[in-house]
Length: 365
Image (cartoon, rainbow, N blue to C red; front, side, top):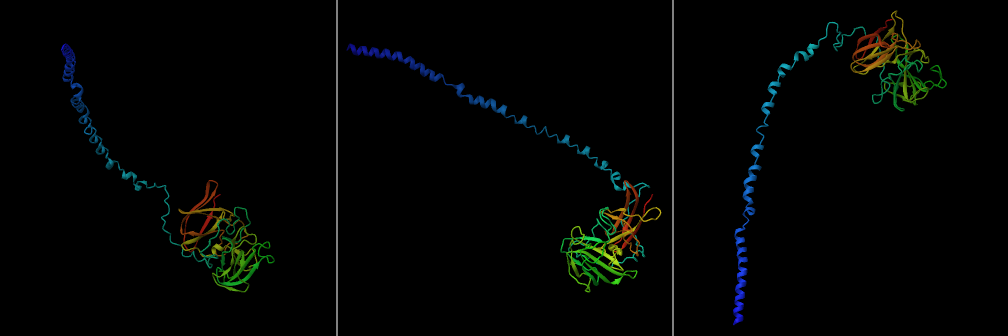
């Protein structure tokens, strides 16, 4: 009985000791609700949105719309006043009285008697499918700048094997090489060659021949009749040729005679719309001048002609020229002969198509 009582007292005392701890924990749990910590959301939502929503102050687009102040075009549009059309217009660039205007580019009326001497009786000795124009570096009467002997014909450069054509109707009077027959100062000068006597004479009544030299092959024989355009042989480099080309000569009277040549450019028909320039270069006293260089230029091209290097080549009796330049496109040209930096002669001339235009070039002292 006593044990039960003592157990009861011990249990009561233990309960009284434990109860304040439980009460304090419960009170703590009821009063220590962490409102400041748990209720930070109101403070965040209260303070941050006003500071972050600065879009009203950041929307600077209303203030940077400075386009009204930048639109200086109204003040910068003095284009109406600054377009100095009277000053910029070419009409204000009219030259003064001392200015020499260029040609009007309208061909002057030709001299009715200027074409009487022309005798374009020959076609091209090379077809249109190959090079059929005359080389300008070594023309008739030229020396290629003093490097070669005076030229008694003209050269038309082509590869070996290109067909050579008769320039007019005629009869073959020679076909072969010149190893044993002399047509020049030395044998084997032309190599393989053909000579054709044509069915008409010169304007002076002399027999007329064409000579075709340096052939690689001869395709005709003596006595054979040929028509214009017939094949006589092929281009080559035989004889004293420097590379393959056709050497063409016009001879009158005796076709064996090296001194009986004429300038082929006064006989070969120009290309359509092209013409020929011919003339004489003399000093102030009228004496012929040899090996003079003439610069002939238009707005499109520049060409050079050379007066004959000496008296070993002949002028055409119909002209009496000592320089010739063929295949010039019809146009105005300025012909200049210079002595160093000084022009000793300068003149504008119009080249007519399909005819020879004559020019006297007299150099001052």
